[in-house]
Length: 239
Ligand SMILES: Nc1nc2c(ncn2[C@@H]2O[C@H](COP(=O)(O)OP(=O)(O)OP(=O)(O)O)[C@@H](O)[C@H]2O)c(=O)[nH]1
Ligand SMILES: [Mg+2]
Image 1 (cartoon, rainbow, N blue to C red):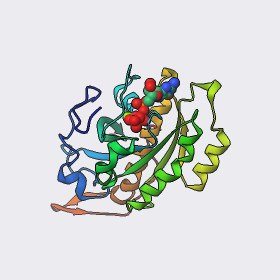
Image 2 (image 1 turned 90 degrees about the vertical axis):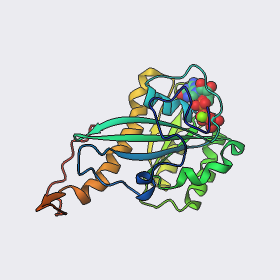
Image 3 (image 1 turned 135 degrees about the vertical axis):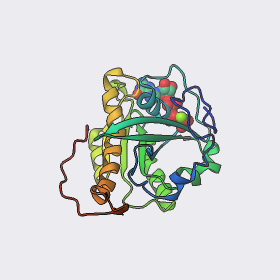
Image 4 (image 1 turned 30 degrees about the horizontal axis):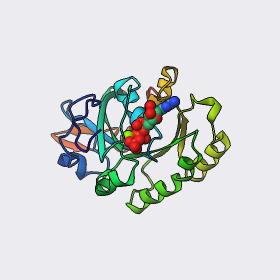
């Protein structure tokens, strides 16, 4: 695990440092492509206590498996996966952040800058990791993350059924109070992998929908781009 995205866990080449290229930093949600050569990137950060399984979840989504061994993330690891939604290829760029304070201090500003969605993870077998969510939410709010940025609550390690400390009621109440989508997952159990994918795919669909409502009918007329009213809202989203 490393500050720079040179980790062997990386699924594809990614920006060489957290200073991302201008198109990603310049707009809160990148506009849809007007040509097929431009791929939109959605930046999703994954935060929560150390050891809750953030690295394993992001690896399960981008790499399709559970890593044999992980070390505490230092700074951030980037992982990326191209997904296709309604005919558009979108890059889901997952920022796997460090849970340990000493490994994240200098990076926090980078995490939240122009983020498109936030995934809050806790460990269903550790009540402390659930209680600490309040602190993570405060940090997120403290970095001027807009209320329109979708937030998701993920209770991980649900394969450890005999050790569950955070019941479903806790989870529902919390997610409801904070207007979050919620998922219970296991990064470890392969039978749960679809559920892990759903976390990121549902966000990607939502982000795409947010923008496609505005730009759905982008048309070119006489060489000029014209925006027209959305005429249909039916979605072919795979989620
Ligand atoms: N049983 C079980 N263990 C898991 C699961 N996900 C992760 N783990 C284990 O939990 C430990 C921590 O996982 P990581 O993904 O490294 O945790 P992290 O949240 O990235 O931790 P930091 O990088 O320190 O913030 C590892 O030993 C994993 O093997 C899961 O779904 N089930
Ligand atoms: Mg980690």
